[in-house]
Image (cartoon, rainbow, N blue to C red; front, side, top):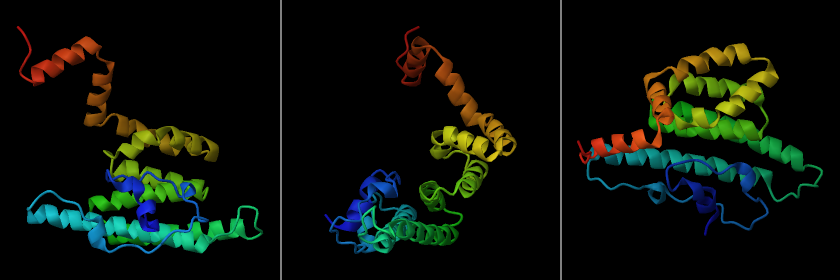
Length: 209
């Protein structure tokens, strides 16, 4: 299996979930990035859907290129090597710059937020807490339905507390929690299992009088 495929092993479900720390730069990998066709996946003949699939493939390939570039910059230095920390720092800095450029390229598309998630992971790995919190706040305010918001909420609160920025984060999260889909989700989570089962039967048209 080639290096680029390993780098994107977690993309099968359309999610960027593999952290850069999980990649071993000492592995003897083929780090060439395959052509965009290798990232294409669609099950529709609709021109619109195929265009969306192509856009997503281009985005995934750009992430692959950034990750492979990080591995190349980091090199095969062992953790105890004198320049290891410097290589990691430089590699992450370059990956962050390139990801930021790609976010601008994909601005206004769903792929922008796929890259945004990648940026959050890179900033966390680089321990850039201020920038990480800025990126999280941007996500909450501009793409409030993203599942990453809830997944990273606890970390965001911890980071804000450490940086003394609770007053900035709390009103944003309070507003987000009151948005219609969040309120509906919370109400549903408070229902008893029996009520949920009845609701499901009604929705399926199989509830008894």
